Image (cartoon, rainbow, N blue to C red):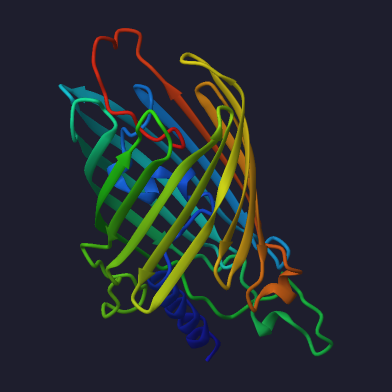
Length: 335
């Protein structure tokens, strides 16, 4: 009976995984997950992105998600090609559900004019996903005596084994930038996910991931020469599940020249009916890093003491020495 309950919980977990994709609160600091059409959309030749998030540590074993990505911008006359590789690993709490994600993304940026301020990009992504569960850290009633004493050495007499699954998936994205010399500038994009509709369950072949979509947009408004604000929103849906994030950043430049940029920034976001997110960081020439924290406001808030999780992002943009003599689109500096 206990074994059946354990299997039922894992199947339920599969339904939940189908309902909600892994996400970062600093979604625009994770461009490879946000939209494949953003590959190559930055000032430079290559970009390295690192992300790490710990969630629900106040309840028990935290949910931890780590990601790494590398993408390149390759000039092609007045247009630009982008290509990127990315990987992340997610470990969900004490149950030990592990998800490993590997992806290859590409994009083509079309310069809408010769001044480099208007850009339309199309991108695609193919991915390989592997999921597994281990019962090594799970506990069962057989390990408790009549006085509610837990004996970890006691034979649990139950096992769900070590189920695993793997599948390929695909996504498609469109992204638009408009970054004139005089502010404001704008960007908007849409991503369609789970185009392959893979099976996503451990013990049945009847659960397929629903096709999902994400719309994101924002603007950069210059208040003065050294102060900008970035209002943004991100709306995602998959099946009957939706997520809306609204908010923005304010950025103060300490140094701002054609060859050097040093700034600090902070922001506040609200993930509707879920959490408030506070973020702060710095942009020093070709390095941008930020730290954020989620404060839970959902029905889970009392159990979590209104705490959520910390998240760190790091972006490094470099340029190859032999790259010169080309004209590329002017991409939004927030990427």
